[in-house]
Length: 465
Ligand SMILES: C[S@@+](CC[C@H](N)C(=O)[O-])C[C@H]1O[C@@H](n2cnc3c(N)ncnc32)[C@H](O)[C@@H]1O
Image (cartoon, rainbow, N blue to C red):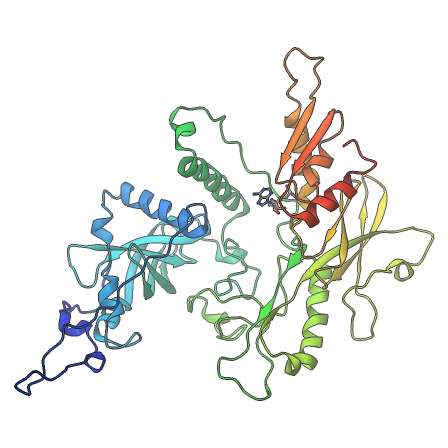
């Protein structure tokens, strides 16, 4: 399975930087060797439902399936921490090495491959390795670059043998394979939906084990497909960092885009696209809607002129806004709210039609988080602050809100087949409460954000709530 670099067992001599030792004189004038102060690894407290917490469950699942104990994959992080150099100390170099012909065994809920490799120091031990863009069944070459107690992180260098589910021919995003923006484009859409289903099933397995053990859950249905697979995201947040070494005035525009996912090298023809910084310079997002891509072009052009004015890095908000058009008036005249503008100073927009409700809509791109925006869902409109939460895929909302509506109609006991109360926990600006309220006596929304509560109240006025 693995063919790691040559191994030299570490000794404590390796682990200590001599320069850091203080050695006071004894009475006889000799230097007394003081025990070196070891740097201790401090494990961060991980919230179990966070991505790191879920990873821990997934690692445990892998170990169970491979009949391995946690002890058998435990890494000696302390000796790495106390090596002479954190980049090229002898122990660091033993751990952070290239490993060839690694068979990927599993895929995590966020799309990373999981595999087992030999521990480079203790021959009878293994390591769990995370391989971004590695698929179960792939045989790959990797570079391990970071060690945690129960797993190591790596970059994908080459795919030696392709998994039967790997479909690189489906990739449309030029940044795919290095950007953190999209993870699953090299799977068929059916496989992507199946992975989502497995993620939900795992959520119940990890967080509600009694419900699963006592068979109290209904069967898991297939995942509802999105009508749009690309060009659906109604919010993106490209960002930039300032260079670490402060210059008086920046001479070159910093990259503006999304984070790079490690330093992968497997897509040789796109290696240089977006650059090599921790943030990639992104000029189009295949997942975002057409008008957000227009906004991205506009805001990048503005940034090109203004980047010297920034003292710190920042995040840009690009959020789609919808105007319901009056067909008797010119579109531009009706775009009264501020939005991203093109090089001529005109608001960029895209017109679309809701055939079902016979309505024409203009989509614009808002950049001010405090600006009030409108989303249009199957005839309903929702207002909320651009910076607050709203579902990111507008194209799927008529389907999911209908699904919820259709499956809510459980009649209250001994009643006239009517649902009396609907409680929408975590209601945001009221999307599901409002779309499901028809025929219900009373809807109660629960929400922690005061801003969203006030919009939920406003959005529900005149509806059935
Ligand atoms: C994923 S959003 C869903 C909003 C809404 N259901 C929708 O689909 O548009 C989750 C919402 O839960 C709210 N929230 C988070 N923690 C909460 C808590 N402890 N109590 C109530 N609401 C909370 C957030 O402010 C956010 O609006």
